[in-house]
Image 1 (cartoon, rainbow, N blue to C red):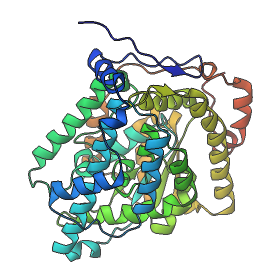
Image 2: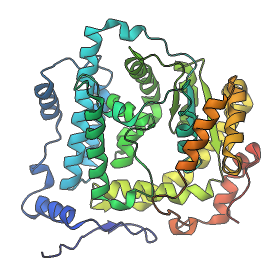
Image 3: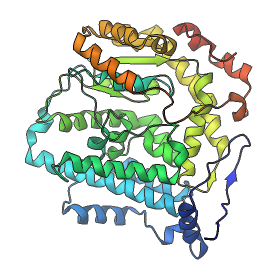
Image 4: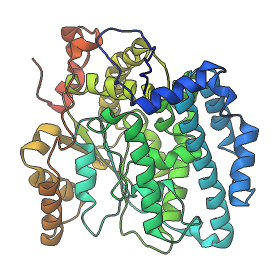
Amino acid sequence: MAQVEEKSDIAVAGWTPPRRPQWVRLLNAMGSNLFEPSAFVALDEASLLATAQRMTGLDDFGDDAWREPFAILLADIENEANLNLTGRLLARFDLLRSLVFRLRMAEAEKRHPAILDEQIEEPIFITGLGRTGTSILHEAMAQDPRLRAPLGWELRYPSEKTDDDEERVAMTADEVDLWMEVVPEFAPIHEISIDGPEEDCVGLQHEFASQVWSGTHRVPNFDMWMATQGWTQAFAFQRRLLQHLQFGNPAPRWILKGIYASCLPSVFAEFPDAKVVMTHRDPLTVLASMANMLGTLRWQRSETVDYHEIVAPLSFGIPFVLDMVVEQRKTGVLPDDRCIDVRFADLMADQLATISRIYDELGMSLTDDAAQRIQAYLEAKPRGRHGGHSYRIEDLGLDRAEMRTSFANYMRHFNIPEELQ
């Protein structure tokens, strides 16, 4: 078989895109040899809506709030994201899946109006930068039968499609397998949950108010909408989604996870009785990893990855957001009695002891049964089982001393030890 060479436009030295499998290179080449990829895969609103309605036999998408971000997102995907044929296929799948999800949610509410009477009480939100222990903390605490986390398959496929949970798990597994086939190097960067706890952004994408869309596509106008007005809408949908998941299957207490440092006041506005567990780690250890993850995600769908455009907002935005969190804590915008701080160093030194302290601050007791379940889960899930993922701050073209200074206020306030000298 002839080898197809890839042509890419990487704007910054220091990041090398993963080599795609041959079938992906051939597919993308086919999509650009005679026509533009857009000639093969339509991403316009009319086509997407009509297809979703035809697939389900339903026509009610629920309230109209989602239509504004949906339109902004579609315009950016078409005009800014520079998708290849693989990218357009994946984007159309994602968009249709979310539209179908909305149609089936609205239909379920007609059949069962009591869904929207479900009470979501004292949810726990785990948040922090990537690589700070949020995933393992979320997964471990979800082993407690008194807590419930949304699962990967139930956030992707609504029960109106099929009442067979095993079928929905298999559908999710196929989707995850395809992701890893397109870019195998993504596995050690981030694990996508199938039948385990999953982060909130997966569910929020059905409202078209989620960081998932920003991670997989270059969508600057959508990013601006999310930053300025998207979170209020996102958390209102979050409540509705939890009501659906909880209906007929009561949850004693939800434990959730997301990257919410920039929007914590919106969490408390929608869920005033929530508790937030925020993990803290030396940001220098995670900055390069976050940039590489975003680059890899976008390389999955585009021939052009502007690494400058990824690194610049991270190097400015992360210090800005972390300083904002410090100020919000000092002024009481984020109430101390609603926030629990967890240092990554403490979590790694003694995971069960750290979790026990979190329980104390939540006003819960860590029962022997829960402790045993959590310990067994932690022992069965060692770090780095999918391979290593380590990158240097210098790979981003950033000055280490300058970045260290920009994080000083945050690290001092939360007493975070330096991991990189």
